[in-house]
Length: 300
Image 1 (tube, rainbow, N blue to C red):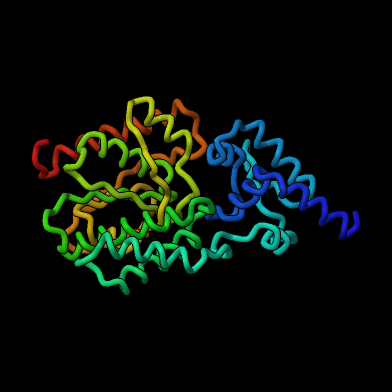
Image 2 (image 1 turned 180 degrees about the vertical axis):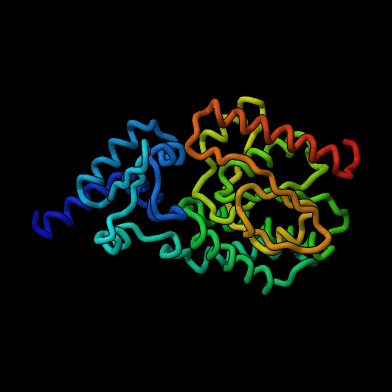
């Protein structure tokens, strides 16, 4: 196959949004390789469908297959890395218009009037956009998620500095992708505690979206997840927290005095069947209820 013919073939393959997303997920995974089962969960597709697309990419020489026992890992072929980078730019290479960032800054300056100066708000907006673009796999709804992420960070900063009149107990759940365990725990605690507790989540290596199977597992017990999304772990949310619960993210979370730290050893639900995810959900619910019973909060 000639160079021109091969390039045209690659373009046709990656013009398919599912195949392009598969390549991006593999490239942006922590180990730069992934299992078909995990890809299926991340994409919300049946495993045979993902296998079909992966086989096409493998046959085209864009992917490599590495068998390990009964499983197989897929990674981008080393000689195709530059080509893939050209065809599929990372989120950090997709710039948001300065006017949009300025609009977000102006709106949040109004929201945090009397608490933070416009310069502080603007700096957090720019930094929050860069964090979402560089550290997560989010490529859609970046303006609205930048505004929300910045507002969450500024609220945490205000709470940590004692700038809010009435302190509400803050609990932070941290896992690796902020797409599974931390979202399960946060959803359940919000449901049980309501506005008596401020619940935040973060990830040491955030994914692009909350796993669809997590949304299903929470929905089964009547727990909504709303507009939650994976977000990077930042300093101010740790400083604002009264309780920090980590799940499988090692020493990524900074330690500050005066906070209560818990480490829950819980299996990562990524790639697992719904029956196993239900077990993980129920285990987390027991732990969340025990945690809630120890928190000094007012009765509703």
